[in-house]
Length: 496
Image 1 (cartoon, one colour):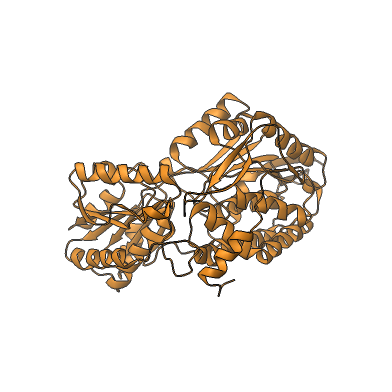
Image 2 (tube, helix red, strand yellow):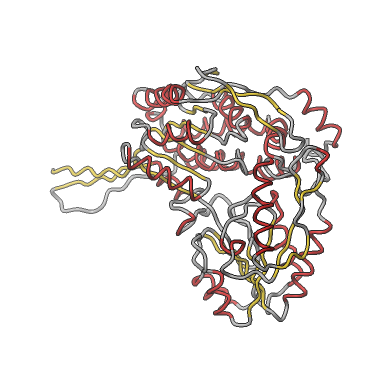
């Protein structure tokens, strides 16, 4: 419904059927325990209650995935057949795009226009891309002496646990589920307890697309219980996680305490965005800086939360960002005119407010924003916020806020800018604005980040890998490189 009005979306929301139980072994499964409430951040109201997974439900899902891998048809299908199944799933996601976008908007606050045009587009493209890639992978036969034949085959690793966060609930799920399935693995997907509904819908669509029972299972529950049980489970061969660095450490410990399963982590970020005075279009640099920090309510691990701008152009760039912050339309995510929705919930809003208070106490200057707004709606709305005069050693400079809060730094020397950009434990992404080709190459190589965007931000497609270094994690999502996480190399040496 790209042309739907606010009233249209509100009407659809009232009639939207919402899933409430796990999806295990190709069927809906109520589980054995209790339920928990899913609260919409747009108004603080309960959307529904869903099944709360404990150890028993995790065991049930892992057993279904184990059977599907060990004796089911999925790993043994011709890769082209697996690819066709993923293409059918992509088609079904596209058919249900309206309902899925609406569900994402309701459960996490993303503006419905963004959920429809950005998030769901990414999900559809991801399943199609890996569906088309599935039969393009080839094994190797290196040259040996004439008396032997060597074969190197890439084989599916087994049962994959995929734990994903709430900020892009379907996009990040698809980045893990699609390559794992293309490789021939089976998957247990655990979404965030804040955004379980869209993931449950994805599991139902996978079964409708013809994936055999147990190939894609979806369980709902919190991290300390369901996530921990998945991380410790001896029948899970790979754990792929996107979320905070603190929780990523837990999954590494779970692997050490269980079966030494492979753990792939995409964690936090504190991404720098450097603007040099020779940037070809300073207005575009400023507009992109504002878009990058305020898009998705700033709830992105790649958000360019540190604007590092040359002192000679700082006033012009920062003033433009502040003007955009003040004119950004914050409101009901079901209104297509809304540009920024609520934060994910009141607990997250309180954390962002705590960061703002600490920043002021530590000497940063608040230029705009910094307060809760639209409180009478019951939603978790927060103003787009800009600080300058931020000390490089302060919490605001070093810790991930995960909200629409920008820190501004100025510099006079390029080496100073690079040092400032790299003065973080994270290494997920970075931006650079310059018209000098040599500078672009030199600085992008010097920046310690998994992705560097030059004269743009958040650009790319499925052909390029995504992931971080340092405390931003390991491994890569997207591209053919993602398959390395879900496959094992086997060498077969045949003496002739």
